Amino acid sequence: TLVMFLSHLVRAWRYKMFLRPIAPHTRLSSAFRALIAGYATNNFLPRGGDIVRPVLFSKREDIPISSSVAVLLIERLADMIGLTALLGVTVLVFRAKLSVEFPAIELFWLPIAALLALICTFALFILFSEKKTRRVIEFIARGLPKRFRGAIERGAARTEEGLRGFRGGSAVPALIGTFGISALY
Image (cartoon, rainbow, N blue to C red):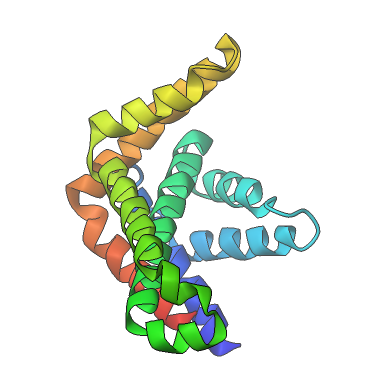
């Protein structure tokens, strides 16, 4: 239980670090409370915590909800990078042991590792390239009605604001937080 709560504390710290360029004086206790409330919400409304967490945090810290949601999306991207890297290393390092339980891995380990590397590389490009981030968001939004497209574009502007902060100094805390969360999990 202690390790679980410590992993949640590290996740809340990382969230606060992602928000630092947008809102430098947020409290860790607010981030932690919002995270735990989000996890509690997930028990009766799957993925509902992804709505509750940024709303509670934004109200408690008096920052725009769109900024909090944008940082949550960036956090998910960092989680995806961490998970694909971890899976890729696992496939490469434990290939022989995995092949015993999953014989098909012996045939497909190279394509699996290549796909994981491609996903991780794509996510890193999004994280570190403003132009690529904008292209991906425009591609996703182009088929939507205008009112939804406008909301997505406003959210994209906030996301880019958060990414600028990430690119401008939050990368090291994000990597430390992502590694810390993975190690504690």
